[in-house]
Image (cartoon, rainbow, N blue to C red; front, side):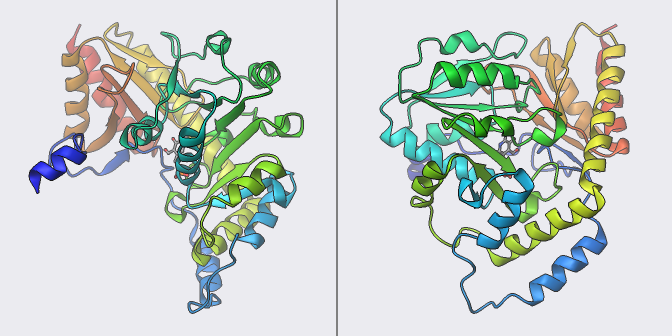
Length: 362
Ligand SMILES: Cc1ncc(COP(=O)(O)O)c(C=O)c1O
């Protein structure tokens, strides 16, 4: 069996910090540090009691779709839902990757799942590399062939860099025969979103999620927004009953709660303030061995000058029971880590690990 597994799964995942490492502070998945308020959970629990377990749920989660349309200011036929935006990434990469007449382009570095999925299923793609400061290079798409599909994330994971709506507008206008899929998983952390562009361009798809700003990664709800013709085509590729009734009810109550209280918005503002504080704190150490990149999302990217510094940073974090994301080995991310902004206490622990490594060099 070992040979069988090695043949089909040559790159199996192994825990990076070793089996004995039990983290207390999870700063590796870009989750929000706080769970949703108790009163919201109680309302959701009450809603769960009304769910008929013996019946299939709404086939296309229509009641949630209607509520989301109001939320995003579009028509219900212009959006669809799935268990997480990664389900949409999978659907789009599979369909366009296997049926494409143009190029499948994926910005790089990006959310690792894009490349991992393509690699696992042998879907060929053209990388669109960010520059050495991790900024987008729009001119690199000048030679895009028609009927191409371009995937990009903004604010980008794991670099925190952003593509401006004006630049995206120019790309959409320049390549009207190609489709741009813009992963906006972290959109709530910035002021500008791409939503208004949906009204002007039919070659745009936006992906949103409840996993980040809505503090609901466990609920598994992703949203795709585009024009009604494309929604109708893509809906035919999904299996019906994508969302469990629990996801549907929880997502609806989360939206309602946010409209009434703005609780999630307040969490986002707090994370943004913590992020800027941590960035400043790390930059003040002035270490030329560790570069911290400014970010528009709920995480920071840090690059060490050598493999030794990189390992020391991971070790100092592990000693404080802080788990961060080791990105070394991923394309263009040698000696890089990504740290999610967590509670003030967890951020402080990370800062102390960072300073220890920075000072160790002076
Ligand atoms: C850019 C990006 N897109 C999608 C996802 C996956 O989100 P979901 O939980 O909705 O599947 C992530 C998760 O970290 C992400 O960073």
